[in-house]
Image (cartoon, rainbow, N blue to C red):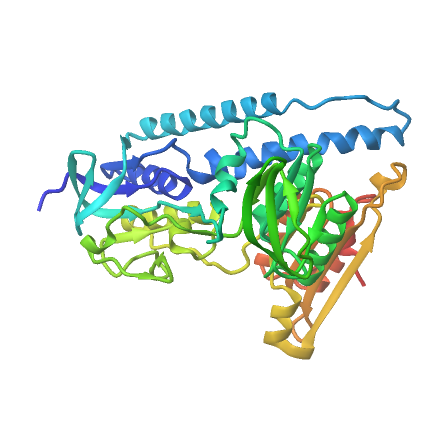
Length: 447
């Protein structure tokens, strides 16, 4: 049977863009459908605009730090409207750039929602399209808890379009999105209260990362309501009244409530049943090579709910294209994937947590760690700490995990991730000469 395209991609986010361009480079006839700005969550309302806001939030600390080094105090003001304007301008620029990359690679961009008609046919608007192979790369979206008045709360999608900076804000959730936005808004001058269901943020991360970040956030002025949740949200004259349950149930009045309590695969509207595609726990079920139960249909990125990170989606998309169109069989290992939390203080990690390592290797695990005041803050007077940690399996001397909390943690762990991925031992770290004076040298001097 003759098809309209060799490959049809649903979703022009990180994974879909990477796969479509790579497949086209092998000579495939490719089309990609997108109903929103091209670029996906990362470019439009995720990693990129969020990191720009992180940068903006850090300037207030620089003004304060400079005084300890002899600079006169600075009386400055912050313009929320300007920040939102320039951030969204950059988002649109990047989206257009991605469109130009598609054009350069001769990938046809089709605007609109794509849904399945049958295993080889899709419908976009009033157009029916057939394809030999289909890749689903639709990402995910935030969800709000089902409590009365939750419609008054916003999600991370709306954070980049708030017309006015809230003076008082509650952040509901303990994951990395909640933690990052709490730090951003606090740094920009908003009074922030974070509401978490447990006693510590960032469930799933190493315990020392969790406790050190939370301690740092509290020092920076963020208030926590631990072991608590929201029972009801009401719009009142002073803003939003939050009725809480749990350890601290005192009502809270805020201007804005950010619901950062989870994300789910964005499968609504695809009509997957028309193609007979199986799902599991609300995500598309795939094999190690990203193949669904239909041999010609694949899925990558957050819609598969494996490792929901932009570089992973890109790698999965390229591996699919290399395998199916480049005749270079490839798949992505989901082990030892480095990640970062752009909180304040910042954190990054690669490999196993201490709890994971002890569960697998028991008493043969040894942890090396240090907690210290960085040299930068010797003169600022700020009560800031850096934490570095290596987790080692003593029988092999292999480094199972590396963790850091502190300035530039993400930049440092990216380099260390190469060593951990290659199977470096503690002796390899010990034999590496440090760069003095830096925080990074602590990783090669831990004893």
